[in-house]
Image (cartoon, rainbow, N blue to C red; front, side, top):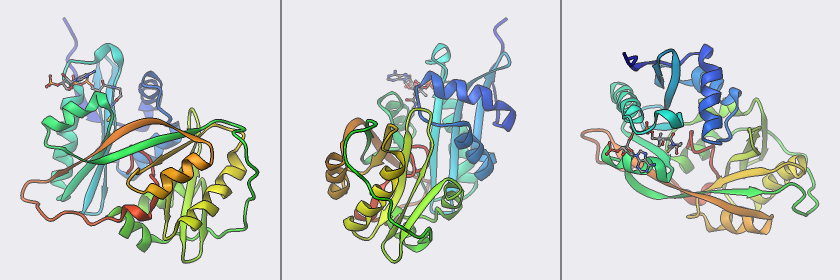
Length: 277
Ligand SMILES: CC(C)(COP(=O)(O)OP(=O)(O)OC[C@H]1O[C@@H](n2cnc3c(N)ncnc32)[C@H](O)[C@@H]1OP(=O)(O)O)[C@@H](O)C(=O)NCCC(=O)NCCS
């Protein structure tokens, strides 16, 4: 008899299975990213197990009561098309509504887009992944910078309080220009990751990008950005990045919610990740 699928919370002992899911999709997340998600929002990290094997994952992180972010929706290739991702999405949305969070967003791949649309998500804008090859030219100077986090600026840019998330990222790499903005970076499976980067002016983003490239020019680098911020896309080209993927940022209001979330794309020079916002 075919074993029955079981939906259950993810836990640290799932790390090997979670990394199998990441590798099967050729995504960039590391074990540390998963640990981080499990630490940040353990109840929102949901898995589907079948016959003792982890077949599907989904994560929901709540940024206060304004916004929740869904990510890591992954099904092992041999289990696709059996409704597993839909089951986990419904469980994640149930968790978000129980928490009383007004809006839910996610960055959808082409493969996930239809599923999210049927669950009430609508396109908001596009998001892009840019990649820079190692040694793509340029000499970068690592300026002496601070590492303060401007939580107010981040909130204005993103539309919700991500300070718990940012506190975690600071454990990797962070730099700031007083009164101007900040950037962070972390390792990835396939490439070093530049972001989040939130700045009042493009000149500040340029200083922070150079700080990061001075440290990582010899590795491939990923930079996810909002093309709505034209300065960010222009800078990516100038610094030798190439556009690699386009995803759809989608948003869904919880029942009874109509007021939009205010955000300022012109301040967003780098995303925290498709799985984080
Ligand atoms: C996207 C993904 C998670 C779907 O997982 P799944 O368990 O196969 O999804 P489900 O079986 O629950 O199917 C959900 C819906 O998506 C549709 N769907 C599934 N795969 C699809 C594909 N390749 N192209 C278009 N639609 C697809 C299904 O038809 C279903 O719609 P329906 O219920 O109206 O028939 C899986 O394909 C995957 O892991 N892809 C790689 C990683 C990825 O892109 N994740 C999405 C991140 S936003």
